[in-house]
Amino acid sequence: MENVFRALSDSTRCAIVEELAARDGQSLFEICTTLITRRGISVSRQAVAKHIAVLSRAGVVDVRWSGRTRIHRLNRGPLHEAQQWLAAHTATDTDTTEPEEYR
Image (cartoon, rainbow, N blue to C red; front, top):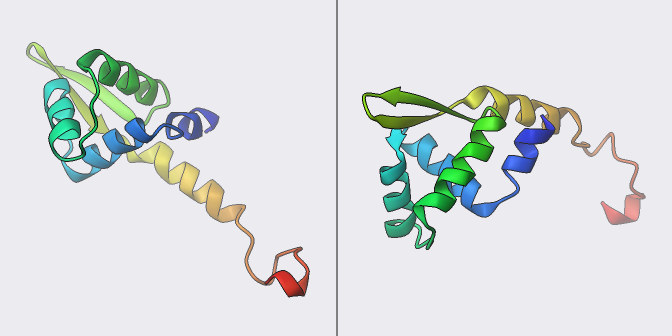
């Protein structure tokens, strides 16, 4: 799970995850185009490929070949695990150790 948090610590990688969540199954070219046109992120194709490799190693993105094109799909499993971990470790009002004056 540490790899998931590390992978999501970069804003470009978060943007890639958001784009794949909106439209899964994109090629590298499609992801690059979307980042530039919709988000205004100026990033090279090689940089996007490296970001996708980090996301893939963390298990967040699955990469499959379709003919001569690599297709990238979002794997929500590791994201759900991270979300559950955060939820389990997020203090509620009754569980907090903060003094009353800070609540």
